[in-house]
Amino acid sequence: MKQVAIAEAGIELNGLPWFAHNGNKLWRLPVELQGQVSDDLWACSKCTSGARLRFASRTSTLGIAVDYSPYDTNLELANMDRLGQAGIDLYGDGRFWKNVVPAREAEIEGMFFEGLEPCLRQYTIYLPLYHHLEIKYLLFADDADLLPPAPFALPKPVVFYGTSITQGGCASRPGLSYQAMLCRKLNLDFVNLGFSGLGKGEPEVAQAIAQLDAACFVLDYAQNNPTVEEFQTVYQPFLSIIREAHPETPIILTTPIRYTHEEYSEEDRDFQERRRDVVREAYRAGREQGDAHLYLIEGNELLADGDGQVDGGHPNDLGFSWMARRMQVTLEQALAV
Image (cartoon, rainbow, N blue to C red):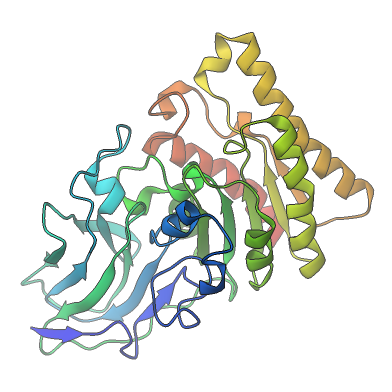
């Protein structure tokens, strides 16, 4: 077997637009934001959600060696398992193949397959949703070739900003976040800027997002702002920063999904509806001002019922598949794909 660095010609890294800018670190925000945003947000930005390695190859063997240091040996999120938090997925020709998941060691070398009859396949490796890592190398058969991946349907990515749901909580593995399913279906690149508990609409983050040349922006947040008043204070300015930098790029706004406890608590239902009204009002105001590239998805339409949720809030794999299908309708409309 031969060891291949991810900088090798033919391997494409997607989902980390500041990779080179950050000195080839697998971070989701530009290094300048360290110290400008909270330490918790900066640490969360080191989780590799949405990052993918893509390439084509005729190889009988494929593996990966990674370093999770400092490795969280507990990985004790009550609503998400070890594979969903720190696992690595392999897809071949658009279909799930196998994953690698750490046990107790920070440095691992895992094999996706060995002894396969080689033929040309398109491969995508999805990196962890809720953990940081460094990639030491990929493993290929000695006689394997390495070719660039097939192009995406569009040259620019869809950029998603949001909370833990956007980051991927609580998919059972990285290839089952709603962005992964949605963009795999449409053959689109994407950037995941979901931050668990920390998607609060800071202007510094909006300014970073505004740097990106996107096919579409999706703003999928509200839940991490503790009060409606705080959310209202940040939402329109956040949207305006992106719109001013990209006057004709589609922007999709989503209202918060329905939580199961809303069915039983009038107080909770009223609170969530007030949050949704903030997003609705921003959408109405934009359209009235002539913004024809602004779209709205009601969160109540994203999940069919509570069977799509792990804990009454975060979607499970079924819920994410529902979200991907509903978002596909609006994304296709916005991008005319």
